[in-house]
Amino acid sequence: MKRITAVIENQSVQSNANTLSEQEHSMGQCLSYQKNEAILFPGEGDYLYRVVDGLVRLYTMDNEGNGLTLRYVKPEGYFGEECLSSTSRRYFAEAVTKSVVEQITVADVIRADNPILVKYYAEVVTNLYRSMHRLANKQLRSRIAAELLDLQDSALSQQGEHGEAIVKITHDDLASIVGSVRETVTKALGELSKLKAIEARYGKIALINPELLQSIAGE
Image (cartoon, rainbow, N blue to C red; front, side, top):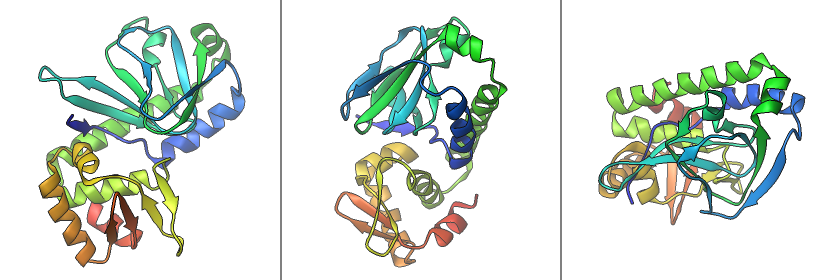
């Protein structure tokens, strides 16, 4: 199933969410999910959710049955904001890795009355615009570089022998993130490898030169 990612939350958003999490720690019930397990389906929004551990993907479906990824939520990130506006949820949520999610009632959110939550979602919207800019204006190689940098601090990443970030992702999955196809992405990864920005391995991509990737991403 083709999946096109609109956005992956960046590190600045997580910083603000960390502060919010400390102030609203353990407000609700923590639920555990296995890799690829469904968390939410379209329907009424009754709770706000905070990712405690793991990585969560929010996606919707197009008319052809393809998955359109809206955003990834890292630890201390939130989703389920439709509960705050009493609107129906039109997306799915699934655990990309083994995850723990805290379920928070609307009443608890209102009692918290914390402006940091507003700032958090304002930055989420900013990141959505950034991702749309990538898709509309950036070359494929630049989009790949930007997405790999975004994933380096997610649950899909691990540290290599020399301290480099190694992102566990297939060419197919990366293609779905940047809105392309496997063959084209494989070619672009080959170009990045020749520049010694990355090292493509089986099911993994090592970020050898993050500074060069940042330059290629142009962000």
